[in-house]
Structure formats: C-alpha cells, structure tokens
Amino acid sequence: MANRNAFRGLKRSGYDIEDTHVTDLDRLEKLFLLTIIAFVWCYRLGDFVDQYIKKTTIKKHGRRAVSIFKYGFDYLSKFL
Image (cartoon, rainbow, N blue to C red; front, side, top):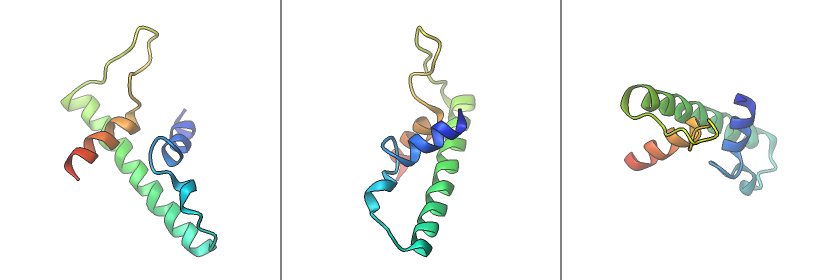
C-alpha cells in the first residue's frame, strides 16, 4: 500500500515529477531524492495530524476520504 501511495504522490496527486522532463541523470537523482524527502515529510505530517489534531473522515466503504499523504500535503500547503 505504501508503494502505491508514494507512486501516486510523485505523480498526479502531488508533485507532478513527470512534468519536469529532466534527462540528466545526476539532476534526476537529486530531484528524486528531494521529492522522496518531501513525500516522507508530508506523509509523517499527515499521520501526526490524523492522530493528534483532527482525524480524517472515513467513508461508508471503510476507506479514508483523503490519503495520509494528501492530508499532510494539504496541511503543509496551508502554512507555506
């Protein structure tokens, strides 16, 4: 489940890493490293907010209305 969330976060649901069109391997490695750090930061922040500040809503089918990553991403976006 975490791999799918990381992939989604790096694609359309978060950082849009595919829109950079970077071809230099060194620059791509640095960009990927920074986006992974940002992803982990958002995920951990979302987990913290979910546990201690405000729980995410659970829909009728039992899943969260918003992923933990997106919850942290949106929370961080409010402050930046």
